[in-house]
Amino acid sequence: MESLNINLDSKMGQVILNSDVFKNIAQIASTKIEGIFPSKKESDFISCKISEDNVKLTLFIKLKQGIDVAKVCSQLQRKIHEDILDMTGIDCTDINLDIQGFVSEK
Image 1: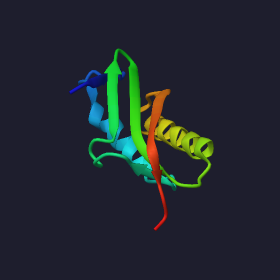
Image 2 (image 1 turned 120 degrees about the horizontal axis):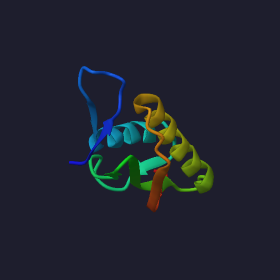
Image 3 (image 1 turned 90 degrees about the vertical axis):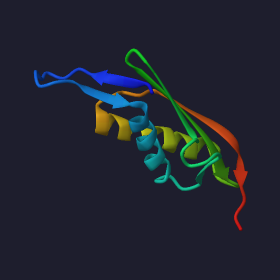
């Protein structure tokens, strides 16, 4: 598993964030935006790659049919960015949305 070491001004040890931390934050954030659905199993619809000090997320999603795609995707990216920044202090600016299709209302 990939992880990111956070530099703290502490002599008590180190803090290492596993890629699952970022995936979990993104998954929770995606439930806060209406019209977003995972296109794969809940546990597999988010990919996280960590290199040096960079976190790259890709969400494989479906959207509710008839919504404003640009608006909803922008809201989702902003929410994920804010939540990761608030919870980890990491400025994740590489949040990609791979739209796999649309879901009609039933």
